[in-house]
Length: 288
Image (cartoon, rainbow, N blue to C red; front, top):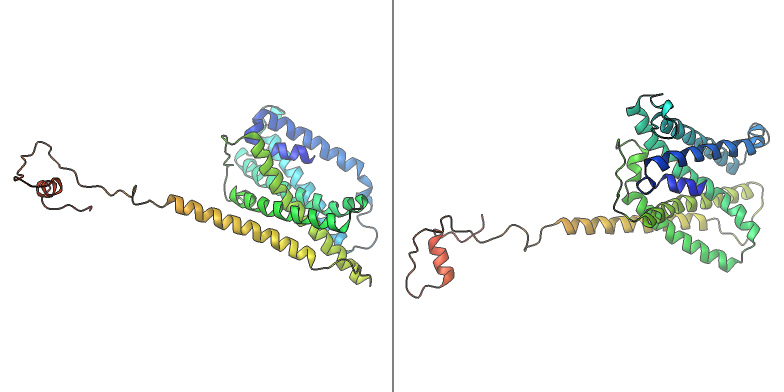
């Protein structure tokens, strides 16, 4: 599902027809995933809810809703996979909903993956030093992902600020997939650290405390990643601003031209070229 999601976010690489069929495949996988995990729905109203379970349940429901709305809106605009469903809802409305909900599904999918990473890492039995190294690597990549997320204007899509997606069709396909993966890594990192925070809170509420785990580490990791992304964003914007400022060479300064080249030259013997130009332009050798 993650691979298909990355493909769906690379619309400028796959094209419209492939995008629709990949979307249909994603919809089928989501349905199969719900069927395989049907016991989870039966246990929703059973047992106690820890902070982790509350957040995980809300996240799962929001992700399912985002997928459902995205799929419905996509089929309402389909021109290849299910064209007979075109116009189920006003196209102008579903286009904006599809654009926003697909990006919300992207964010929620990253958080959903991150919430499961601690459980998967526990089964790998990694050493403390290796965990530290991997955390540092993912913190840096997450910061870069946040920078790309802001640089590509993703918040505008999330909050309905733009009606259309602005895509760079000249960008290499592998670079598009890499950027999408890095952006997803930030939200996965946030989900992972959120899971650590919630589990630490649950342990403290039950009087259990792991002496090897510092409860502040997840917060610090998220803050460092956000700082990296923010700094890169500011540097990028400052660089773009400086590049857009005209330099002395292209600021429009130029010596005034003689309006009439055939104008009679009243130069005198021994007069230099600047002096001659100054005389023929009426004594106004300045840029106005």
